[in-house]
Image: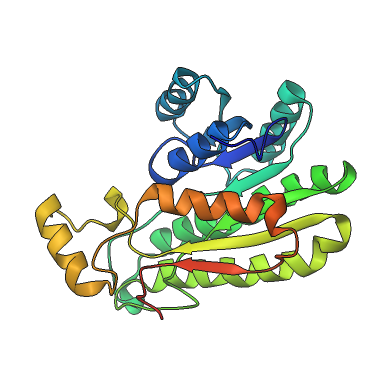
Length: 253
């Protein structure tokens, strides 16, 4: 237990499950007051309960990041509850079944872009708007090693959206470092969450596949992603601006 974030308020979108929950727990363990946001209230409340069970402080806010008014209200509720917003982690993401580019359904394409790209942009828009008016802050976006770093057949929509997140992160970092807002990204490869499993794949089959596909011989853990996020959000990374930290066990090395 350390206290790098004592007295600071952290907002984690997509904080109800998987990587988002691990990030929220990690910040709370280091003293932060954490607000978790997402579309479904039940998993958010589970994250809050897990944080409170460890003696931390947290709150859940139901919000759809594809709706600007929801994100504006989310930031407003965070500030009203805890008095400010120091760190924002934008972890929203969705997936569609693997499909060749010419066969991607239009509604599937728009769903990917609305959440993975536009939702992240709207989140940054409202987060940064508050931060730059109140002394600055740090933003960490969750992208992916799929996109700017690696492509796979059938994943064109997802890769395009995440590549755009990588570029948007770097551009935003240049736009707003003068406002006192540091912006970076973490881009995980295969992580031990349901999103990296194939349909019907058992845990043992997945582990065997990871041993072949990942130079490190395994999938990453949500806690390893969380550790990278906390570093980029911390004062220790004060000179780190516009960086995309790829965590994929050597897949794109």
